[in-house]
Amino acid sequence: MSRNYKLHTIFPSCLYVADVENAAQINKTMLPHIYELREQDRKNIKDPELLSVFENDVWSTYFSRPGTGLINEPWTRDLQRAVIDNTEQFVKLLQLDFGKCKPHVTTLFANIHDKPYHRHDAHTHPGSMFSGTYFVKTYSGAGKLRLVNPCRALQFHEFSYHEDTELNVNEVSLDPVAGRIVMFHSHVPHAVDRPTAGGERIAVAFNVLYR
Ligand SMILES: [Fe+2]
Image (cartoon, rainbow, N blue to C red; front, side, top):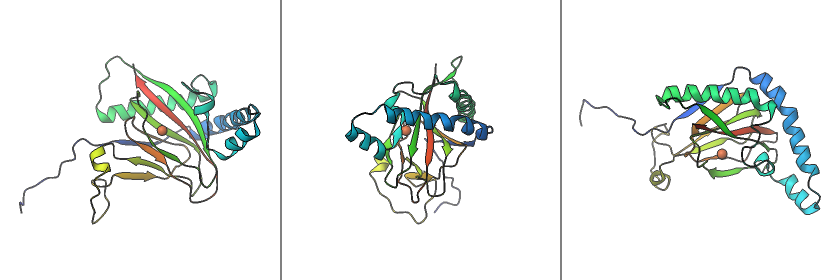
């Protein structure tokens, strides 16, 4: 065994987590609008069978307002500012150089998980650079945000570990915290797990591109 050695961390997957400073104001502004949008979606459904599906599924503006989603809603402006500020901070930490290009929020959609079986399978956001979630309302036991190793070879190669550390695990789960923003490269698969207690988990997901 060598006495002189060093373990290098190469090709890391970076996860940015920050508590937004004006979160209380952002949440107070956005919550009534999010509830109102859900009510509008509910009223637009006339078919009782579809209404039953609506009442049971995770509610998301991803379906009723596809494409850019909520980015043109004035009540999302402060959140978009926070997303941009934090993207710039993340990019600075990563030492990325985008030249004269600026970050733009390209998609913004709200989701409500409020049933014990509500979850969201692992997925990525192709076509974006950075993706993430801002938590508007959470509770103890709300579904965790789970991030999966984007290295597919490791996803299917199950090693056993003496101890879970950031150097070896292939999945990382985070408890949602109201007012917190979480951001990662858009190719990183992520999921929302089922809750372990009853409550309402409201999050706004976003994509960012430099152009
Ligand atoms: Fe997502």
